[in-house]
Amino acid sequence: MSAAGRPVSGVLQSLRIDALKARLMGLWPRDASEGGALPVRDWINVTSGSPTRVLAFDQALLCVVVGLLALGVVMVYSASIAMSDNPRFSFYTPTYFLSRHVLSLCIACVAALIVVQVPVSVWEAAAPWIFVAALFLLVVVLIPAVSGQGVKGARRWLPLGFMTFQPSELAKLAMAMYAAGYMVRKMDARENFWQAVLPMAFAVAVVGLLLLAEPDMGAFLVIATIAMGILFLGGVNGRMFLLITAVLIGAFVLMITLSEWRRERIFAYLDPWDEKYTLGKAYQLSHSLIAFGRGEIFGQGLGASVEKLHYLPEAHTDFLLAVIGEELGLVGVACVIVAFFWLSRRLFYIGRQAIALDRVYAGLYAQGIGLWMGGQAFINMGVNLGVLPTKGLTLPLMSYGGSAILMNMIALAIVARVDIENRQLMRGGRA
Image (cartoon, rainbow, N blue to C red; front, side, top):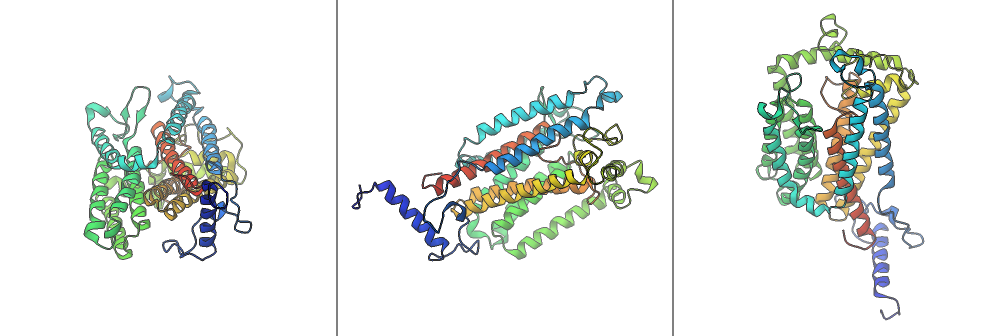
């Protein structure tokens, strides 16, 4: 008991509230990295001095993720229901892709429920080993005896019997973990190019070479975005960041220049209605644009897409947004865009809270996942709308693909764990 007759725990809780009030009211020094008060004002009622009700987890984040998953299930079924009429898929039932997608989703949800129980400190310690495992799988997938014949000349998948696994999806998660841990370790050397940037650039280059050997330039773009974003958010010198950006842009230009089929894709993207490209490299893009044009404002109605009837290849994976545009119109596409914008912003906010609570690794990791979700969604939408050249990237949480859904859910589960630990700290407990 304290001198005032109150329990010690009550006194400590009161001191914590007073400290937070003082910081929010400017009586304590502000966080220099944020340029303002800690982002915890939603947790304390400054006027009354009493703590507001703190939920155990972010319900809004959960609702948005579940909403995207549910819409994805509906649209994958709609986009794939007619594929059994195609001679290539004549042995499949109309619900084949739906059942496999739901199975993958169930596995991903179970994995997420398990992962969210693991403290972030465990993931921080395991990050280098997860990165090494991702590199190993990226090498293994290039072995013909292991990966088989590949698909359309690409070796990106490892057969696991009941499903196939794409190591590049694990590499995205591993890069977010490794880059966050790397910046924590190099925090004192952020102004030194050779110590802060060069080792990370080497790691990205190794991953890039392995991905381009598959080839999977789309995944390399996402991974480079994650690594560069975490370096920038970690406080790397601005001049060094611009130098790295220039080098990466130069590397991409060089790859396009030296690769004839990549050049053809760029030319097809610039003029998809040219007769030379419409039935060739721009076939997917031209039919995707036709789908959006048919959708207009409110769409043709759920299930009424024509382009999915064997005109638009990969309608249930890379070009799922085009089917959404045709069936649900501009309204449906706008809802998806807003949902991904909100999701990315929320992940950044969770990361900002963690950094303000001196949990730098957790904060940088959460923001890296925000870059992953937002960046990949932006690239997929840009490809579907003809804003970017065609790339083989799925729409996160929505497109058909077992390993992509699994890694998306695991990545978000770890961010949910970051948020839970933030809330535990704000309630006066331990992370």
